Length: 192
Image (cartoon, rainbow, N blue to C red; front, top):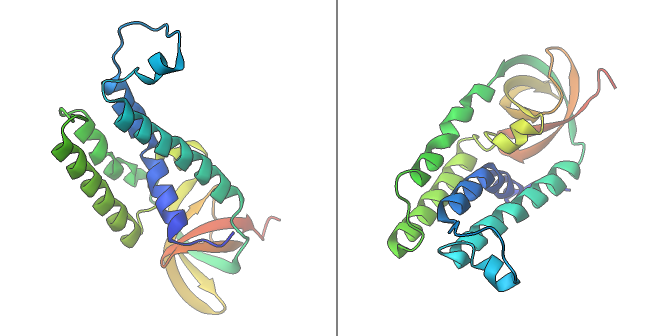
């Protein structure tokens, strides 16, 4: 599978799938836990259309993330020159989570539209600033986030890398480009 903006957006949306769960919990009616029909189950939330839409988008993004990560092509060969771990930057992604705890009202159209505009801008900034890999779902799945200087076809370059393999200096890897400076390590050539 070729990578592109679609992949970046899926990675971004999936990063905030736990936020959908928090929003659903906050919008939950909670009167009783037994529902005798699908219609009653749909009405679990105070604002069912918005909440189910958010939860649905989240579930779809997780399924697409799984599909994308499993079907990324091997890519081209590099040799790593230096590595620094940037997984600690995960804290920066928590700002939208804080919004959910400060009286975010799904019935208030202006708040909902403002939140959608904020998340759209955050998505664009995340992709443009190579912060796309700051994603707790990928971290839980075992992916690390690294700043790597590497050599490709005799030319030294650098970028932000996501990898399930712990990258090592001097080793050869196959990589696939996600954005201009964001890559995924797909295979360790040195260790097979």
